[in-house]
Amino acid sequence: WRLAPCHVHFTDALHARDAWVSPDEYAAAQANPLAESLGAVLAKLNANHAADLARLAGMLQGEAAEAAAPLGEYAAADEETLSAEILSVDPDGFDLGLRPAGKGGAIAPLRIGLRAGPQTREETLSIFSKLFQETYARQQGWQ
Image 1 (cartoon, rainbow, N blue to C red):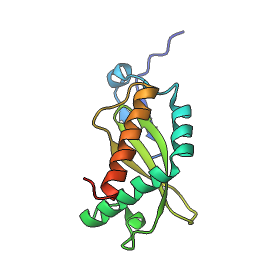
Image 2 (tube, rainbow, N blue to C red):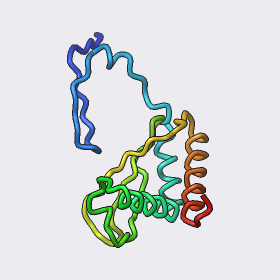
Image 3 (tube, rainbow, N blue to C red):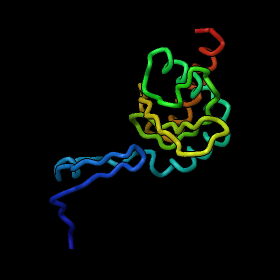
């Protein structure tokens, strides 16, 4: 037996959206090259870089307040500290989960694009290392 899809429905639970995809687009789609190592990458980044992720979330929160960007309750005027975790990474970017520190409730995903998309575990860790360094430098006023 061989499955030949004639209708494909894509559901993205993380971003609460769905769409119909043509069979040709489905057949041409390629898997995330980070899929095999994604679990280990997420575990390492979230466990070892909590302070860096909180700093990144704070910087994004400040920029959102200045630009009146749609972070909703996460762009509070008093710049309260956020807890953050990386939810997913792919060659186009990553999803950062934001939650006001000390508060329960749902995590709000924020999609962040990457200039140079990673293709391997090592590239992913290198990109995040650079991102964390740039965030720290901006916070210190060095950039």
